[in-house]
Length: 185
Image (cartoon, rainbow, N blue to C red; front, side, top):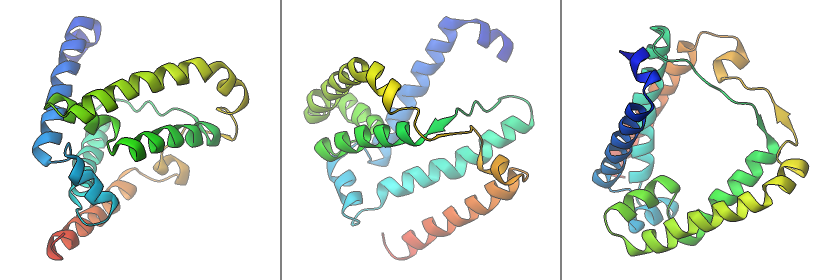
């Protein structure tokens, strides 16, 4: 079945579309498409965003490694650089600071009719993409490849079985989530 799916581009697009709709729906149900919830996270008064992200990690991290172990998926880790990390962080941070949404939550908020997300966020993403695309040749030549580092996962970096990282990470995140619930956050 997976081989057939890999060959069928239309099916891949359809599956991606459905997954995107579900992702947006889950963000909406989780409350993280609300501006006040995101600002509450930034002010450390509402930890809904952190809980949603950590829950996704607790489910996704073991899920990916289970599928990898069964040969259903392979990791496509890309090389990075300090330059691209700084530029990407600045772009993300400026957009987040101006609007109070990240790209995923702005799409979810626009999907449920938030005008600031639709006009400020989606239009802002398009304008930002155009600006970055225009500056890309110069950025790529001078900044983006500065301080390159190899593409590797944390388990590869330390030469350990991935489960020696996954299991402690899941336990740590579960403890953080439990403490947030226990303290009323």
